[in-house]
Amino acid sequence: MKTSLSRRSFLKTSGGAALAFPAIVSAEASKRVRMAAVGCGGKGWVDLNGAARHADLVAYCDVNISANRKGGYTLVKEKWPKAKGYADWREMFEKEAKNFDAVTVSTPDHMHAPVTMTALQMGKGAYTQKPMTRTIHEARAITEVAAKAGVPTQMGNQHHSGLGYRTVFDVVRSGKIGKVRSVHSWSNRPVWPQGIDRPAGSDPLPAGFDWDLWLGVAPERPYKHDTYHPFKWRGWFDFGAGALGDMGCHIIDPAVWVLGLGPAKTVAYEGPKPKKETFPAREVLTYRFKGTEHTVGDELVLKWWDGGNKPPFKGSHLDNDTQVPSQGVMFIGEEGTLVCPHGGMPNLYPLDKFKDFRRPRLDRLDHYEVWIDAFRTGDVPNSSFAYAGPLTETVLLGVVAARVGAKDELKWNSDKLKFENSDEANGFIREKYRKGWEVEGLS
Image (cartoon, rainbow, N blue to C red):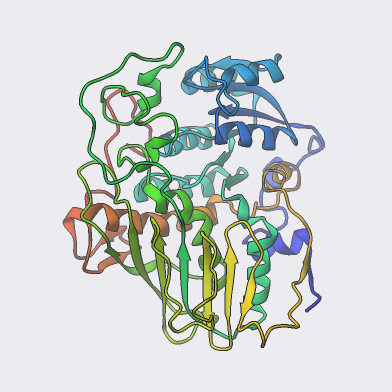
């Protein structure tokens, strides 16, 4: 196989189309895009630097103005001394609105939607970390508003632009393994605490850290050192979406994209009983989708495994002694099985049958550049909210199933945005924002 998928043809297969944003393509299209950043540490540092290779940073904010862990406010200030720094993103939006065109949103999950929705309503393009939102209602609302806003958007599932998943797309769509019978996606996460209870008491706040701003739309609770911030917030219902929410938008992405899957019909959970405020330490989720032209039969089953759970080889073309990666995706087809490590390149099984297999040659893409280029070209980015919104909804269906411990299948009605057979699960589709943090269209 010696095909070559060009950048533009790839954008089209990802849902992009030339000049989809004609309003932003003008005589000034050659000017540098001006960007702001919400969240400067950890992944925020990565996103900020990635986007700023292609745009001019004019403003940034972080609730911890003393942080320099894996980046942070103080290091941004040193690297971009002309950019203006803030602690509160709302103040930055108010004072700098005329000075930026685009914003990176790299906060804990519970603040993705409030910041992103506000940006879209102001006519700003947004690059929002995965999962795009923490709740299903937020995902649907932002998808709809983004479609009307007509500005470039991109979710931070950067492997969608990577050679590995794009190779998976090319190989499976070419029919190399035949039509697909089932898919397994798995992760070795969580690598943070889950399945725990809230600790008692409170701790002094670190200097320069605004806990109220960090909580944002979430209910008030005392600050506890090394419990929520940094990074460990992912395991808590109020702030994150667990291992599935963290990695599903990466590792479920190939199945949804390659197979052209629509909304899931049902989802069910296997694992320990959830705690009151945190996700289970180990999960298995079973999704059922309507079949497509790329699948066998009228239904496709996708299973998600995390917390040390891995898929069995039964029904695949793998030998029992095959070593599978710690994170990855497996497509079981009529004629063979494809396994792609997360962040790696796919292999086909049985190995003897595919010993002469050659991967297609693909152009390299920069996920941030794809987004920034859209301000000049009008192309729809490959993981725009038109695609990323429904993908996020799919992931969050499993998050809700795990949260309620749904051993029996939850029946999902995407048109009505509700589960047909669980009032408890419906209670987590949309959640209230803390008083004073309401956002139009979300709360």
